[in-house]
Amino acid sequence: MKNCDNHTKTLNMSQSLEYIDDYFRGTLNPAEVSDFEKAISSDPEFAKEVAFYLGSVGSIKDALNLQKKSRFRQIYNESKMMVADQLVPSRTAGASIRKMWKYAAAAAVFSAVLVSTYFYTAQTSPKELAEQYITTKFSDLGASMGTAVDSMEAGKRLNNDGDFAGALAMFEGVLAVDPSHVKALEYAGITALELNDYEKALKYFTDLSAVQDLMSNPGNFYTAVTLMKRDQPGDKQKAKELLQLEVKTNSANSETAADWLKKW
Amino acid sequence: MQSFTSPVNDQDFEITQNLRLDGVPRRIAEDQLFRKYVYFVREGCNKYSITEEESFDAYADAVLSAIDTITKGQFENRSTIKTYLFRIFHNKCVDLIRKKTTNKMSVHQTSAMDDMMEQLSDTAKSVIQKLIERSDFEQLRQRMEQLGEKCRKLLNLFAEGYSDKEIAEIAEYKTAEVAKTSRIRCLEKLRQSYKNT
Image: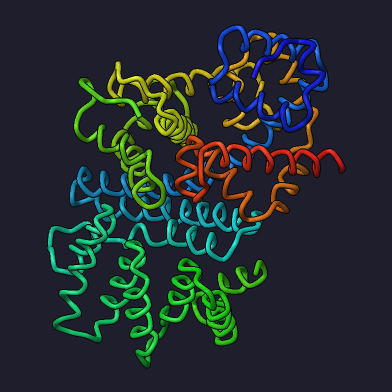
């Protein structure tokens, strides 16, 4: 788009925003860039449009960055704990790790506050809520730092490294031997969900929800998350009913379920 | 997309490629990049005498800034990602020290806005800076929340640094032009609603 000082006065709002967008996208030629910057000084209305553009795009970016930073915080705390595990002599390891756990717990609370603040303030669709939940809760299944490796630990590590197909194969291996293994059902569902294999995720979570006599069973809640993420006709309604059930039964995830229902 | 040759190594190549994708692969690549050079945080504490929290913030901001550049295809592979990232981290630390000593911490301005303003000439920047200081961003954020889901998705993808061509592919628009027009309309809608307050 060709522009000069006076030209900006004849642009309507849409053209003006497109012109500003072109500038920040770096698609204007050097002469147009120079005209653009002169227009900021000479045309107060145009300068206001530029400030609006920067404010809105900047605010959206910051909201996204806040989420990413909370994930980075989690990674940072884990890396600190791993370093402590490797470097601290065994005689003092217990005390140091206890200190680390305190720090990690505080940081986890901080992260949770950040994430929940974001969930509260941003008006998001059920699908987005599910995606945010998956991003923040399922990326780390908390593998132990010991050297002993069994299929469950190997699966968790693969999941944490982002190898969801490998992790799912591990958990399915466990289920082949013990089809009612509660944690394997939960993790197989989570990794299937990370792979967007909704049918499989729903099967594992439904099987999990059918397990009786557990202190806490996230099966129904995870089924709701899967339906929200899949977002096919009828999914939202089914998910809503499951979330309402979570609130009614005061389950471990009832607080999150209640928050989501407020935004429905 | 640019072609990567030496000095970018295989792992860096994989990270930069995956940062151009959407969804889970991108998230994993973001985390990999953060994890790979997380020891910078300790170096920041030692080298610049800043607190661990400040160093973490500077490093996290540096990673976010690098992700933005890579996503936009603007990463010039004249240096390794490590060198590039450390340069940004160094600048963030120096900036932090400068702001602390001159007590120039801005309440309104966000780090993403800071980065975008860098494109402007000094004169233009000073005009915009004054306007931004007078803006009511809380109200702007509230207006944003009232935009439809489609608009918010479009603007989120744009803020993530995707090109209009990539946005068209992800959000299923026929062409990059259509994606761009829709995106501008969403901004216009937001502008109109912000003006009317």
